[in-house]
Image (tube, rainbow, N blue to C red; front, side, top):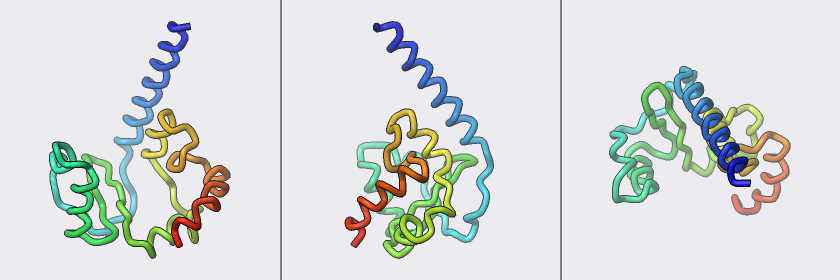
Length: 131
């Protein structure tokens, strides 16, 4: 009952913490030619919704930019041509990285942490939404 559920939750949290810490401290490779959005971590935390901070960074930096948090950076894509390239035309060449590992215990095989086979099936179902 309750003990087993608690233990599974504790195990899941411990695994999540391990994955996050291992992935976070791995160095990034590539992406140096992508503009880096300026700002502070405090810009992403506060009373304003997260998407507003990202929208302001989009206005300043364009449709593709990097967000750096310590040794990690994330590529943010809002340009529809680039998104189509990443999600439809050339998806096999891109690794989802640490974000997928972080979200796997939370989202299961949801869109972001899905493996390639799951992604292919769901991607086909979602393609009409990109037209």
